[in-house]
Length: 238
Ligand SMILES: [Fe+2]
Ligand SMILES: [Fe+2]
Image (cartoon, rainbow, N blue to C red; front, side):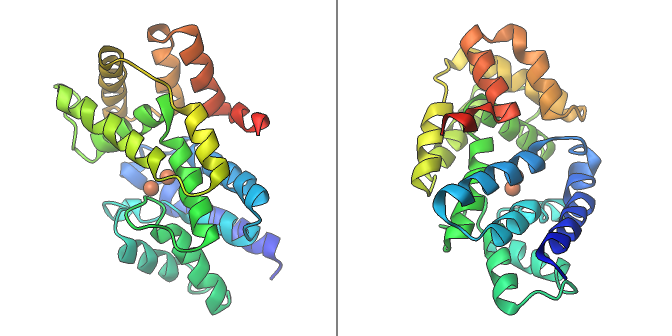
C-alpha cells in the first residue's frame, strides 16, 4: 500500500478511535488533532524528521485517551501497536510510530527525533492562552477540576502545567515558537479564563467556541495571539 493511502487509513482510524469518542464524544469537532498534525508536519520539515512517521504519530498521538488517560508510556504504546496490527507496517515503522504516541505527554523524555517532533507539536497546543483553555478542558473532563467551584489551586495547577510543558520542548524551532506563544497573564485573568473554560468544557463545548466566548475578557494583543494559535498563523513567522 502506498504511504499516502496508509496515512489516509490512519487518519480515519484516529478520528474513529480518538476524535469522535474521547471524553464521551465531547471532543468531537475540536480542531486539536488536525492542528497537531499540521504543526508536526511543519516541525518535521524544519528538523529533517521522517514525515511518514511523524504524520502517523501525530494522528494517533491521543488514541489512549478513551482508555481513561494518555500519560502512561507503556500503555500508550500497547494501545497504538494494537490499533496498527493489521496495517502491514514494518517492525521499524510500527516501533517508531508507537514511540511518538507513547511519549507525547512528556511523561518520559521522547527518544527519537520523530517522537520529539510529535511531543513538541502537542506541547505547542498546550502553550500560551490556548494551553490554559485546553488543559482546563482536559482536567475538567478528567474530574480534576470542579467547574462549579474553581479554586486558586486549580489555576496554579493549570499555569504550572503549561509552563512545565513549554520548558520541556525538545527541538530548537519549537522552543523558539513556545517562547513567542507564551503570554504573560495575571492570576486574576487566568482565573476568569479557567472558570469560563471549565464551565463550558463540562458542558461539552469545544475549544474553538470557548476561545470565542473568552474574547471579551482578553485585550487586543491576547486575542490576536489566541487567534494565531487557533488558525496556526504563527507558523508563517518561522
Ligand atoms: Fe495527549
Ligand atoms: Fe493532544
